[in-house]
Image 1 (cartoon, rainbow, N blue to C red):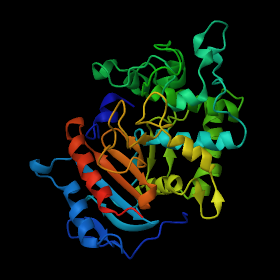
Image 2: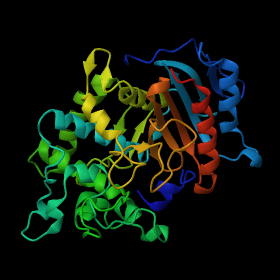
Image 3: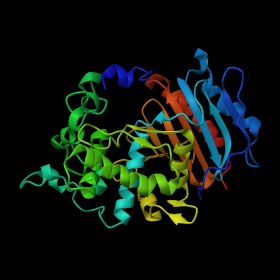
Image 4: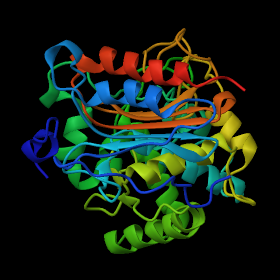
Amino acid sequence: MNIKTLFGCGLSCLLPLTLVGAAPVSGDGVIARYAGDLAVSAGSLRDLVEPLFAKDAGTAMGETRAVLILHDGKVIAERYAPGFGPDSKMLSWSVAKTVTAVLIGIMESDGRLALDDRVPVPAWVQRGDPRGDITLRQMLNMASGIAHKEKEGPLEQTDALRMLVGDGAADMARYAEAKPLARPPGSAFLYNSATTLILCDMMTHLLTDSDRPADRRNAMMRFVEQRLIDQVGLASLTPEFDARGTMIGGAMMHMTARDYAKLGELLRNHGRVGGRQIIPDRWVRFMTTPSPTNQGYGAHVWLNRPGAEAALFPGRALPSVFGAVGLQGQYVIVSPRQHLTLVRLGVTSDADLPALRDALARIVQRVPVS
């Protein structure tokens, strides 16, 4: 994978979701359904969602490819751009971090991990290495203290890009684990994808003793399939792996809009799918609790509160709203008190993100609190 490939496309409860009727297809290939319910009308949903797909400069929000809105577990709006539909798998970017946190929660509930234990990274266990004191909790809160440039400086010099497509791409976890500390563990918020790659390597070591890339990849995929895909019904979930067989759990997963919605519903329903507890309720509460170093971030989940970065829209909706958020405007927004899950997928530049967040905030505000 090269830089052009990576960025060329524009920087290019829950049983199966309850679907209300067939989605009509217009002559230009647009798939849209606005069902509405007693809480919000189909007409108001249409008025709120259609501007996300507008192309005129006055409402520029980038290219929206899919919007899906669930209320009480039922699809009340579903809209796709021409060329996309319910079967289209779309890149997660950092929404994958939330999926990774769910997988870690499953391992923690199995007793393989403990939040306040030191992260078992072999490269950090040498005597006198301060990285050996980093805990799993600090990693999930993005407060490990590891030096990592996610977006700072020229794009080609960022650690995120070097790790994904540059000199660190062959073994992303080793690249990430070699970074020194910039701050004492637990002292500061530093959002980065390297942290999540280290966690994926950690999970893989717990699943297999083999260093063969195929064995590492297969062990992780068995775990993902048996404990997440099959249990939640995420049939389209497709993670990518690096050459060493480490899941790229910080940025590179693919799913349909409906399966992204199922991820949101899993968290909205406190880790339950129908009558099965997939991840403990206490783990979902941990994920959605403000972290000590950033009130706007939990454990690999963004919170609708003021914090170090504005990923959602604090002050515009309930502080209990949270979301999985990815580069270029990938959003899985959950509001438990409104029984709401909102998915938006597409390609939006940094300059257009404020307008996109404003549009998404207006959708959330339209659904009453119950």
